[in-house]
Length: 308
Image (cartoon, rainbow, N blue to C red; front, side, top):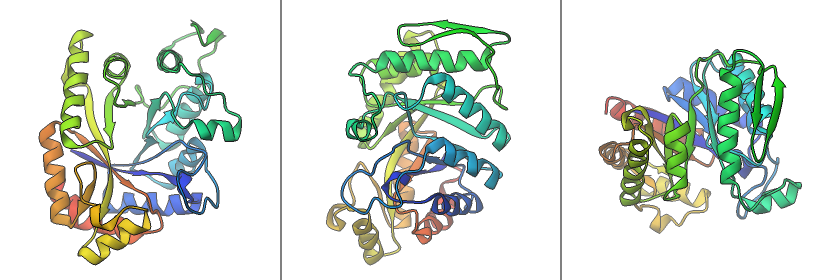
């Protein structure tokens, strides 16, 4: 299994804090460091210092880390023209020496779009499908590239630059019953389901496997992953403190849609996720300033689950 850190920097964290967190994750042996792609805080709390752009951040981390996989979980199809995104990802991949992964989704946070004047179309699945085809087409093209779709048109694009990797991993996720699994089966290297209890995870994994079979694709070629809020404490006091710090009820922090508890409980949860078919787990850590939390996860849990 693979184990990555998943962060939400729009909740009020600077680039310097993200860098410290990513470098600590690398030192502790995590496989990757991923961040959301949002421009506005969600929920109550201090929004300062304000948002950081995901791909600008990852460009910095590309040269300030050496081993970690780096990516978005997930970039919004509404935030960038796909040609621009293809150039950004290819450049960051080159800067990192081939360690980038692109998570791409339809986008959902309408208030964020209103706040920054970003168009938020009602129908976005078609945009996402075209973006996936266009981006990978630009990377794969050996000469001028053209694309004619409902949402995007490219004429004689030089299709440059190219990523360092022969194939940048593409992550598609979501809970939709039909279109999301179908898109993942056609275009993704990884399917991710987040913030769901174990029975739903099992159902979504079965659905995307069936979608692969319908597309004539071997389901075994699609990596399956889970992203869940993670709160770990050595005792009830530290667990409650960490839950309260990120706005969760300390009395109800343990539930099926969260990785929470003492290290032994977290190990048991990860084992169950493996048994459901998860090949990669994203530990969502909200408080990037709590490096002791990351240290606990990396020293007391990661070595125990590494060989699952």
